[in-house]
Amino acid sequence: MKKIRLKRRKPGRSRGGDLGVYIILTLFGVMFAIPLVMQVCQAFKPLDELFKFPQTILVRNPTTSNFKDLFVIMGQSWVPFSRYIFNTVFITAVGTAGRLLIASMGAYVLAKYDFPGGRKLFAMITTAIMFNGYVTQIPLYLVFAKFGWIDTFLAPIVPALAAPMGLFLMKQFMDGLPNSLLEAAKIDGAKEWGIFTKIVMPNVKPAWLTLIIFAVQELWNNPQSTYIYSEELKTLPYALGQVTQGGVARMGAGAAVGLVMLIVPVGIFIFSESNILETMASSGIKE
Image (cartoon, rainbow, N blue to C red; front, side, top):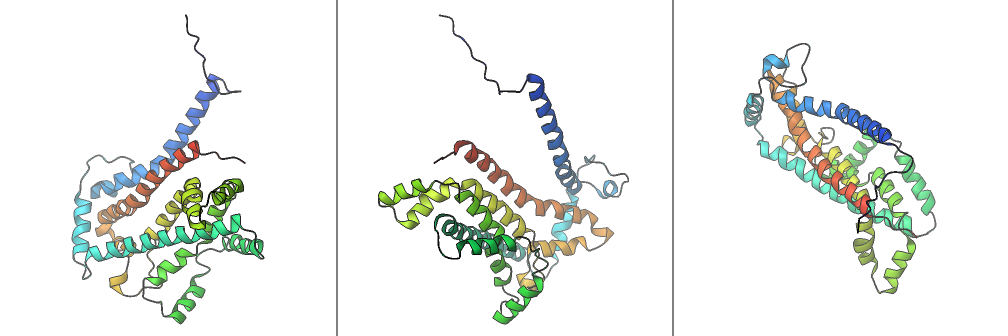
Protein backbone atom coordinates (compact mmCIF):
# COMPACT_ATOMS: atom_id res chain seq x y z
CA MET A 1 0.00 0.00 0.00
CA LYS A 2 1.38 3.32 -1.03
CA LYS A 3 1.96 5.73 1.82
CA ILE A 4 0.63 9.20 1.46
CA ARG A 5 3.02 11.86 2.73
CA LEU A 6 1.41 14.95 4.11
CA LYS A 7 3.46 18.13 3.92
CA ARG A 8 3.13 20.37 6.93
CA ARG A 9 2.94 23.98 5.95
CA LYS A 10 2.18 27.07 7.88
CA PRO A 11 -1.17 28.55 6.86
CA GLY A 12 -1.06 31.74 4.84
CA ARG A 13 2.68 31.66 4.08
CA SER A 14 4.32 30.63 0.81
CA ARG A 15 7.81 29.30 0.27
CA GLY A 16 8.86 32.78 -0.75
CA GLY A 17 7.45 34.13 2.50
CA ASP A 18 9.41 31.57 4.51
CA LEU A 19 12.58 32.46 2.61
CA GLY A 20 11.98 36.17 3.22
CA VAL A 21 11.54 35.60 6.95
CA TYR A 22 14.74 33.56 7.14
CA ILE A 23 16.68 36.22 5.23
CA ILE A 24 15.44 39.01 7.50
CA LEU A 25 16.20 37.00 10.64
CA THR A 26 19.66 36.15 9.32
CA LEU A 27 20.40 39.81 8.60
CA PHE A 28 19.31 40.85 12.08
CA GLY A 29 21.35 38.01 13.59
CA VAL A 30 24.47 39.16 11.74
CA MET A 31 23.88 42.78 12.81
CA PHE A 32 23.58 41.82 16.48
CA ALA A 33 26.56 39.45 16.28
CA ILE A 34 28.99 41.98 14.81
CA PRO A 35 29.62 43.89 18.10
CA LEU A 36 30.24 40.61 19.93
CA VAL A 37 32.64 39.38 17.24
CA MET A 38 34.46 42.72 17.27
CA GLN A 39 34.84 42.57 21.06
CA VAL A 40 36.37 39.11 20.87
CA CYS A 41 38.70 40.08 18.04
CA GLN A 42 39.78 43.29 19.79
CA ALA A 43 41.06 41.25 22.72
CA PHE A 44 43.40 39.26 20.44
CA LYS A 45 44.64 42.14 18.28
CA PRO A 46 48.25 43.31 18.62
CA LEU A 47 48.81 46.99 19.34
CA ASP A 48 49.49 47.90 15.72
CA GLU A 49 46.06 46.59 14.73
CA LEU A 50 44.36 48.29 17.69
CA PHE A 51 45.72 51.67 16.55
CA LYS A 52 44.94 51.04 12.90
CA PHE A 53 42.39 53.34 11.24
CA PRO A 54 39.88 52.45 10.01
CA GLN A 55 39.40 49.53 12.36
CA THR A 56 38.88 46.05 10.97
CA ILE A 57 36.30 43.65 12.37
CA LEU A 58 38.44 40.50 12.28
CA VAL A 59 41.94 40.11 13.69
CA ARG A 60 44.72 39.38 11.20
CA ASN A 61 47.59 38.42 13.51
CA PRO A 62 46.01 37.06 16.72
CA THR A 63 48.08 37.24 19.89
CA THR A 64 47.60 36.54 23.60
CA SER A 65 49.97 39.29 24.71
CA ASN A 66 47.03 41.46 25.80
CA PHE A 67 45.98 38.85 28.38
CA LYS A 68 49.58 38.42 29.53
CA ASP A 69 49.85 42.18 30.07
CA LEU A 70 46.56 42.12 31.95
CA PHE A 71 47.75 39.38 34.32
CA VAL A 72 51.05 41.22 34.90
CA ILE A 73 49.23 44.47 35.74
CA MET A 74 46.76 42.76 38.08
CA GLY A 75 49.61 40.82 39.71
CA GLN A 76 51.22 44.12 40.73
CA SER A 77 48.17 45.14 42.77
CA TRP A 78 48.59 45.00 46.54
CA VAL A 79 45.20 43.28 46.78
CA PRO A 80 45.27 39.75 45.30
CA PHE A 81 43.41 39.39 42.02
CA SER A 82 41.53 36.42 43.46
CA ARG A 83 40.03 38.73 46.08
CA TYR A 84 38.35 40.86 43.41
CA ILE A 85 37.00 37.71 41.76
CA PHE A 86 35.64 36.40 45.07
CA ASN A 87 33.92 39.71 45.86
CA THR A 88 32.23 39.82 42.47
CA VAL A 89 31.14 36.17 42.52
CA PHE A 90 29.83 36.48 46.09
CA ILE A 91 27.83 39.64 45.42
CA THR A 92 26.46 38.28 42.13
CA ALA A 93 25.49 34.89 43.56
CA VAL A 94 23.88 36.16 46.77
CA GLY A 95 22.16 39.08 45.05
CA THR A 96 20.77 36.92 42.25
CA ALA A 97 19.55 34.16 44.58
CA GLY A 98 17.99 36.68 46.97
CA ARG A 99 16.28 38.60 44.19
CA LEU A 100 14.86 35.40 42.71
CA LEU A 101 13.55 34.17 46.07
CA ILE A 102 11.99 37.46 47.17
CA ALA A 103 10.52 38.30 43.76
CA SER A 104 9.03 34.81 43.36
CA MET A 105 7.46 34.66 46.81
CA GLY A 106 6.12 38.22 46.58
CA ALA A 107 4.75 37.64 43.10
CA TYR A 108 3.02 34.42 44.20
CA VAL A 109 1.16 36.25 46.95
CA LEU A 110 0.18 39.17 44.69
CA ALA A 111 -0.92 36.90 41.84
CA LYS A 112 -2.83 34.19 43.71
CA TYR A 113 -4.18 35.88 46.84
CA ASP A 114 -6.69 38.69 47.08
CA PHE A 115 -5.96 40.81 50.14
CA PRO A 116 -6.69 44.45 51.06
CA GLY A 117 -4.26 46.85 49.43
CA GLY A 118 -2.84 44.24 47.05
CA ARG A 119 -3.65 46.19 43.91
CA LYS A 120 -2.30 49.43 45.33
CA LEU A 121 0.88 47.66 46.38
CA PHE A 122 1.35 46.29 42.87
CA ALA A 123 0.69 49.76 41.43
CA MET A 124 3.48 51.12 43.63
CA ILE A 125 5.80 48.39 42.37
CA THR A 126 5.08 49.16 38.72
CA THR A 127 5.62 52.87 39.43
CA ALA A 128 9.00 52.11 40.99
CA ILE A 129 10.15 50.57 37.70
CA MET A 130 10.16 54.04 36.13
CA PHE A 131 12.82 55.35 38.53
CA ASN A 132 16.35 55.09 37.17
CA GLY A 133 19.05 53.75 39.47
CA TYR A 134 20.93 57.05 39.36
CA VAL A 135 17.90 58.83 40.87
CA THR A 136 18.02 56.63 43.97
CA GLN A 137 21.77 56.89 44.59
CA ILE A 138 21.57 59.70 47.16
CA PRO A 139 18.58 58.28 49.12
CA LEU A 140 20.26 54.86 49.21
CA TYR A 141 23.50 56.37 50.44
CA LEU A 142 21.70 58.17 53.27
CA VAL A 143 19.85 55.00 54.27
CA PHE A 144 23.02 52.90 54.21
CA ALA A 145 24.90 55.49 56.21
CA LYS A 146 22.12 55.46 58.82
CA PHE A 147 22.24 51.66 59.11
CA GLY A 148 26.03 51.49 59.05
CA TRP A 149 26.13 49.50 55.81
CA ILE A 150 28.63 51.74 54.02
CA ASP A 151 31.78 49.84 53.08
CA THR A 152 30.13 46.43 53.56
CA PHE A 153 28.75 43.78 51.22
CA LEU A 154 25.22 44.74 52.31
CA ALA A 155 25.46 47.96 50.29
CA PRO A 156 25.50 46.31 46.84
CA ILE A 157 23.44 43.24 47.80
CA VAL A 158 20.40 44.74 49.57
CA PRO A 159 19.27 47.01 46.68
CA ALA A 160 19.54 44.02 44.34
CA LEU A 161 17.05 42.07 46.46
CA ALA A 162 14.31 44.67 46.06
CA ALA A 163 14.41 45.17 42.29
CA PRO A 164 10.78 45.90 41.24
CA MET A 165 11.30 44.62 37.69
CA GLY A 166 11.85 41.09 38.94
CA LEU A 167 8.66 41.04 40.99
CA PHE A 168 6.66 42.52 38.11
CA LEU A 169 7.99 39.92 35.70
CA MET A 170 7.27 36.99 38.00
CA LYS A 171 3.74 38.19 38.80
CA GLN A 172 2.82 38.55 35.13
CA PHE A 173 3.81 34.94 34.51
CA MET A 174 2.10 33.63 37.64
CA ASP A 175 -1.14 35.36 36.65
CA GLY A 176 -1.30 32.93 33.72
CA LEU A 177 -1.29 29.85 35.96
CA PRO A 178 -4.81 28.44 36.39
CA ASN A 179 -6.14 28.66 39.94
CA SER A 180 -7.81 25.28 39.45
CA LEU A 181 -4.35 23.67 39.32
CA LEU A 182 -3.43 25.09 42.71
CA GLU A 183 -6.83 24.22 44.19
CA ALA A 184 -6.45 20.63 42.99
CA ALA A 185 -3.07 20.42 44.69
CA LYS A 186 -4.57 21.72 47.96
CA ILE A 187 -7.36 19.13 47.76
CA ASP A 188 -4.70 16.43 47.37
CA GLY A 189 -3.13 17.63 50.62
CA ALA A 190 -0.22 19.69 49.27
CA LYS A 191 1.16 22.32 51.61
CA GLU A 192 1.64 25.95 50.57
CA TRP A 193 5.42 25.65 50.28
CA GLY A 194 5.10 22.47 48.25
CA ILE A 195 2.66 24.11 45.85
CA PHE A 196 5.03 27.04 45.42
CA THR A 197 8.20 24.99 44.85
CA LYS A 198 6.83 21.95 42.98
CA ILE A 199 3.98 23.44 40.92
CA VAL A 200 4.29 27.19 40.56
CA MET A 201 8.05 27.61 40.08
CA PRO A 202 8.49 24.83 37.47
CA ASN A 203 5.64 26.32 35.41
CA VAL A 204 7.14 29.83 35.43
CA LYS A 205 10.65 28.65 34.53
CA PRO A 206 10.99 31.11 31.60
CA ALA A 207 10.30 34.00 33.99
CA TRP A 208 12.87 33.15 36.64
CA LEU A 209 15.50 32.22 34.05
CA THR A 210 15.00 35.64 32.49
CA LEU A 211 15.24 37.19 35.94
CA ILE A 212 18.55 35.38 36.52
CA ILE A 213 19.92 36.76 33.25
CA PHE A 214 19.03 40.35 34.18
CA ALA A 215 20.33 40.00 37.73
CA VAL A 216 23.67 38.48 36.73
CA GLN A 217 24.27 41.10 34.06
CA GLU A 218 23.45 43.91 36.47
CA LEU A 219 25.47 42.66 39.44
CA TRP A 220 28.46 41.28 37.52
CA ASN A 221 29.08 44.56 35.68
CA ASN A 222 28.39 46.86 38.63
CA PRO A 223 31.60 48.32 40.16
CA GLN A 224 29.74 49.58 43.30
CA SER A 225 32.46 52.11 44.03
CA THR A 226 29.82 54.50 45.42
CA TYR A 227 29.20 52.61 48.66
CA ILE A 228 32.44 50.61 49.09
CA TYR A 229 35.74 52.33 49.90
CA SER A 230 37.97 49.48 51.10
CA GLU A 231 40.15 48.04 48.35
CA GLU A 232 39.64 44.55 49.82
CA LEU A 233 35.90 44.80 49.13
CA LYS A 234 36.13 46.19 45.61
CA THR A 235 34.72 44.14 42.75
CA LEU A 236 36.32 42.83 39.58
CA PRO A 237 34.78 45.48 37.26
CA TYR A 238 36.31 48.21 39.41
CA ALA A 239 39.74 46.59 39.39
CA LEU A 240 39.66 45.98 35.65
CA GLY A 241 38.33 49.48 35.11
CA GLN A 242 41.52 50.86 36.63
CA VAL A 243 43.46 49.00 33.94
CA THR A 244 41.56 50.72 31.14
CA GLN A 245 42.34 54.12 32.68
CA GLY A 246 46.06 53.58 32.32
CA GLY A 247 46.28 55.42 29.03
CA VAL A 248 47.43 54.37 25.58
CA ALA A 249 50.09 52.00 26.96
CA ARG A 250 47.39 49.78 28.43
CA MET A 251 45.09 49.74 25.42
CA GLY A 252 45.81 46.07 24.71
CA ALA A 253 45.13 45.07 28.30
CA GLY A 254 41.97 47.18 28.19
CA ALA A 255 40.75 45.21 25.17
CA ALA A 256 41.34 42.00 27.12
CA VAL A 257 39.34 43.46 30.02
CA GLY A 258 36.30 43.86 27.78
CA LEU A 259 36.35 40.19 26.84
CA VAL A 260 36.88 39.01 30.43
CA MET A 261 33.88 41.01 31.63
CA LEU A 262 31.80 39.65 28.75
CA ILE A 263 32.37 35.95 29.33
CA VAL A 264 30.15 35.35 32.37
CA PRO A 265 27.04 37.38 31.32
CA VAL A 266 27.09 35.95 27.80
CA GLY A 267 27.61 32.41 29.11
CA ILE A 268 24.69 32.75 31.54
CA PHE A 269 22.52 34.16 28.77
CA ILE A 270 23.34 31.35 26.31
CA PHE A 271 22.62 28.66 28.90
CA SER A 272 19.41 30.25 30.23
CA GLU A 273 18.08 31.35 26.85
CA SER A 274 18.11 27.81 25.47
CA ASN A 275 16.18 26.62 28.53
CA ILE A 276 13.71 29.48 28.16
CA LEU A 277 12.90 28.51 24.57
CA GLU A 278 12.60 24.83 25.51
CA THR A 279 10.25 25.59 28.42
CA MET A 280 8.10 27.97 26.38
CA ALA A 281 7.75 25.34 23.66
CA SER A 282 6.71 22.57 26.05
CA SER A 283 4.48 24.56 28.40
CA GLY A 284 0.92 25.59 27.74
CA ILE A 285 -1.41 25.08 30.65
CA LYS A 286 -4.84 26.54 30.07
CA GLU A 287 -7.91 26.91 32.21
